[in-house]
Image 1 (cartoon, protein in one colour):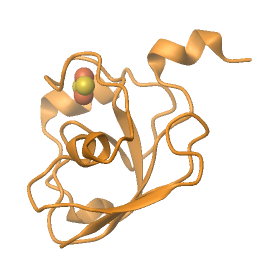
Image 2: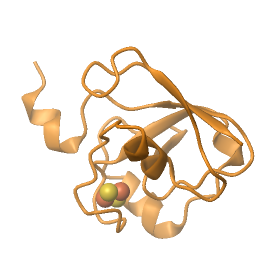
Image 3: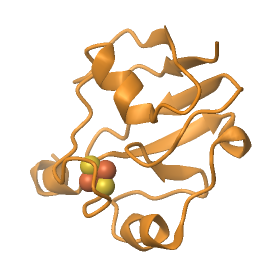
Length: 112
Ligand code: FES
């Protein structure tokens, strides 16, 4: 069973957390099942970018993004080459290390 390590995030999991995932689950599903409340404003329909995460390890093992996800990611705040929308990124066989950005687009204006 692959494991996902969520890196420390001050709001969502201050100490970080390593949890088990099932193949085929999305990163967001795994997070929510483990009480890590990543935002998901569009209810996982690939129509927002609030569920943006950065996959620090295991990126290549994920089911690749499609065009719609890439288009939405373009609008996310702080996108990096290993960014994914966590509601679309499906786990396969490999362990992952995932960073949840401190601020999603919804919060960007509150930054101080
Ligand atoms: S929850 Fe909106 S794209 Fe993931």
